[in-house]
Image (cartoon, rainbow, N blue to C red; front, top):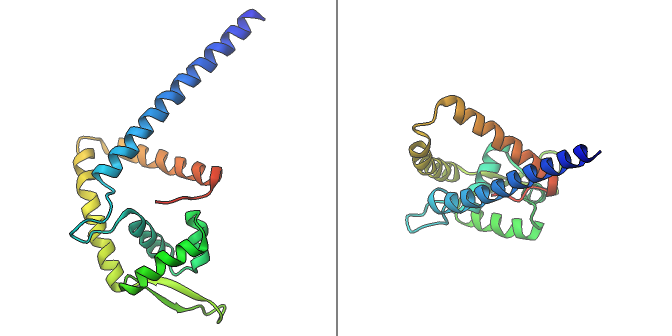
Length: 163
């Protein structure tokens, strides 16, 4: 029985050590990613993190209701509505009729919004290309797979809170 308890304690210690290292590395990654890649809107008009994330979601998933955007981002409907109204004012998104429910509107990315999104994606790819230039494709694919898995688990844990 003593050997069993000792093995359990060793396993718990290893797990705690791994989780501590993982938490530290994730903290460093997020800080560096925010500073180096996913910046706030700058003077050149590139899209900030929230604008980018919302436009990507609308572009990838097609027209969505405000409530659906709020749900997917884990924010209040009023907050999503404020953000999306601002995007509509500057021509990044537009409201269209919902064919399934005439009382509702869907929001979709405008051609101008798609152009801004393409420009932002290009800008975001440049530092990623530099960082991953020496990585074999297999490693990049594995990291992508693991990050996708992590994102699914995080969504299940507490709802999506993009970006």
